[in-house]
Image 1 (cartoon, one colour):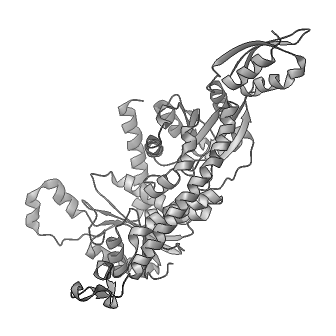
Image 2 (tube, rainbow, N blue to C red):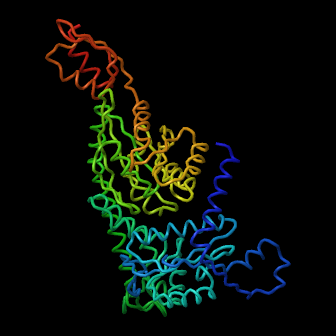
Image 3 (cartoon, rainbow, N blue to C red):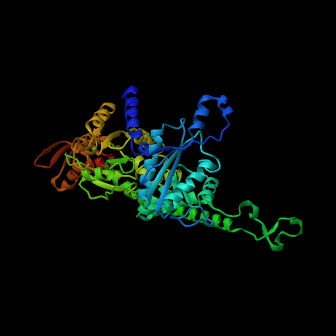
Amino acid sequence: MTQQSTQQFRSDNDVNTATGVLADRCEVLLDRSYDITDADQGGEEWAERESRNALKHVAGLGELEDVSEVEYRKIRLERVVLVGVWSSATGTQAQAEESLRELAELAHTAGAEVCDGMLQHRIKPDAATYIGSGKAKELARIVAQHEADTIIVDDDLAPSQRRALEDVAKVKVVDRTAVILDIFAQHATSREGKAQVELAQLQYMLPRLRGWGAALSRQAGGQAAGADGGIGSRGPGETQIELDRRVIRTRIARLRRQIARMAPAREVKRGSRRRYGLPTIAVVGYTNAGKSSLTNRLTGSNELVENALFATLDTAVRSARAKDGRAYAYVDTVGFVRRLPTQLVEAFKSTLEEVAQSDLIAHVVDASYGDPLAQIDAVNEVLADIKGAQDIPRVLVFNKADRIDDATRSRLASLYPQAHIVSSLSGEGVDALRDEIEERLPVPDVRVQAVLPYAQGSLLSRIREYGKLEESEYRDDGVRIVARVDSRLASQLVDASIE
């Protein structure tokens, strides 16, 4: 892949994205509250200040109860308005629009009706209200116009920014992380998955508690402070916000212990696969890239398939058998997303360990996505944080080939000539992908020559299932075999051999 080809591909996609639905409904609102003499301080900064109020309205693109002592609660989104901020230093306008479209998909998955979406161009987010006080008032009018219940911000907000924006807009404000956490809470089904999601939610909630704050914090109750306490030391004692924090910290510690106690069960499952030398293929990729559908095609299983983000949260292991009879397994993992919350990465570390324990990584990409290269980069960033995953060989797979045109297919083929372009719906390219995966399965490192008596036919079956049978000769006294197996099976073969 040449740098010029990559730039051309991104350029073509930027043009297509910029002429999409968002650009069709563009409305620029200029804010000229800056003194004209500021223009002398620098061209680029002034130009960005001039265009900082470009808001993109998208039709069809939020209900939450009023906030009391806790910023975050389980979200029940109904009608929402999306808002984001971008600058020339962080990317292009087309990339910002694509990120907002992804946020709209997240909101839909969480159960929301997206009413509008807006982007603001400014050097950096406002420290107080994220989009500035003037634009916050305009946003409030847009929210009232659509009768929306919630504002979703395409970023991680500081607690002070959320409160300030809520005070102006008079509706609930949530950020990108809160939406993703809510989706995970809806889709978690296993005991471990639910514990991991709750842990991530509590870690997110802890710094966002609302209350009187330090003004009443840790004051001694009544006369407990004594005469030497001085003015201000006599108060109600431990405040409600401190009680909440203590309860949350206690629950976090309990969840971590529960997840740690679940580790032996995972090790037992992995240990059984390692004990028999069963190769594993980790299927990773962006959320909704079609990993589960492709796994079903490759194995003939009936794993959950849903056109929604994060439909798969609990790791699913599906068995398969190569043409030579050798058994191996596919591990369908949780999908990744750009700016995946750090709380989730930490909480799902045990799930992501499956990737590090695999023999081959099948990286699935949605070929029909507006910018598939961005998906590849996002997944690679997450894989880089998984210890041991960098050294595992990978196979790149562009899925959903039935949804792309010939021009897109040609560009992907030229940029990634070694990748497979497949369709889990029609089956296109799946056989060739399966053949490469089976060719790249690791070969056991112990070569054994033995003569097995016919009474030990089960060992011969295990060779075919978990090893590689190179030669076999049926004789009067038994079966002479030459095979490659793991060390455990090799010792059993040597003990059973009659020569």
